[in-house]
Amino acid sequence: MQYRQGFCSVCDKPSKLERKGTNHVLHLLITLVLGALTFWAFFIGGILWLFIWFGLSVKIGGWRCHQCGGKKVATSIPKGWSAQ
Image (cartoon, rainbow, N blue to C red; front, side):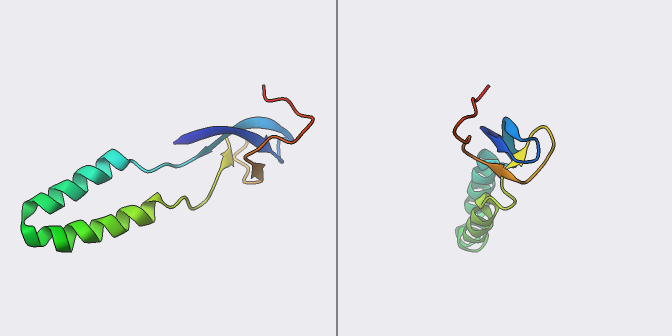
């Protein structure tokens, strides 16, 4: 999970935001194992897995409020609010 400070419109206050992250270490190990099997596996399995890895790295779904789970969030806190 990735976390950052932001503003939730549902809670109407600054809050911690979260989104699912990608386990890059695991994906690197899978890529290396597929590439180490054989020379051809690198081109078939390794390259294919790199495309899958890239697709999984794209953040679909975006940030959510950690407290209420709302999707109506801003990654910056509006003026007049203090980040506490």
